[in-house]
Length: 514
Image (cartoon, rainbow, N blue to C red; front, side):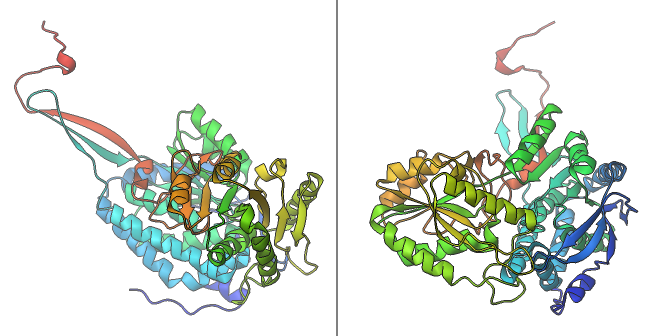
């Protein structure tokens, strides 16, 4: 196993260890960095508001070069055996292990999540590589009995083609790995459009992947095009060469991408907004629930798609739980995400802070009562207080996803009332219930219970493992990533029938004798 590198400690050391310069090209294709000349993107440190480095973004012409190179790489890569492709991905996982500390620190530095979460995100990439390596030996089809004598039927799976990967700022590297590791073992090439808010993370990952491909003499299947919606996003969605577009982000973005891809009869895999709820029953272990809610609501400063945004409390424990939450929120250490003592870092940029303040004003206008927090912190960077809002059942703002640490608190009488309230939002990603009652737990997990793609009992809404399919329903988009058979999204199915007899019987007993 490769040895890990020493953890860099300063901003300069972090960037230098990952090959990030003051000025960087924003596209990688056919094994080379392109001389991009699109609008400059300045990456900011959200903890200080200071610039980290600059990226020259891709133009529409640069995207075209990336897409053409991805098509060419696919035609060579699909001829590699799946286990051979898996070996390349295994080595990618090892290279990520070597750079885990530096890359995890870069995630924290550029995105603002605390260090343990930044390191955890890189570990998720490593785990995805391990999962995908196993898949490379199990891209199985099924054999079926034919109704026709001396015929054999089976299905098999082939590489699909180039894949477009659009990722959001909040998981700037892990979501790429969810797609890229599986797509690579499936035999696909790809073009990655990362968030313009976290371009340095994408540069670093692509450099790591580039070295692995070169060491194996492999086609340049990991392409990169850092650019805006006009120059990269729209062309990618409309490009028939991109057989699958996997897009993670807002509901509005997903609707736009999904329509364009559907219009050309392409495939889309959409991971969109979440408005996740936790139900706490009177019989719950309140200490367990409190700890789970705190991480799920405050972790990543409320900028996870699986962040808990709605907390539904049964009336018998509501007052006690609210008091405990206020005390817990007061104890949250806010500050430098690279400081290991910090529990909550900054929001990603000034606009995120403004959006949070606007949402709180709207919540108060709709009848919400702020129990704790709600303010900006007067210091450099984009820091806010985690916020608790006592809400009524009919506040429209609670049906929206605000990407910030705002937790709306509701009270309910019965489990059926709570499930109805929980499901009465457009999104359907993650959900949880805290209870000691087996019947309540099973009721929540039943078909008439939570309508989300993820439903948990006695754990929070965030922190999904890569062994389970990740994704949601309704406006969350219906996509699924990771999990046991996620490789099927990146391959095409083919049904084969072989006649090894001397007759030509037709199916369904059809007779057609000349």
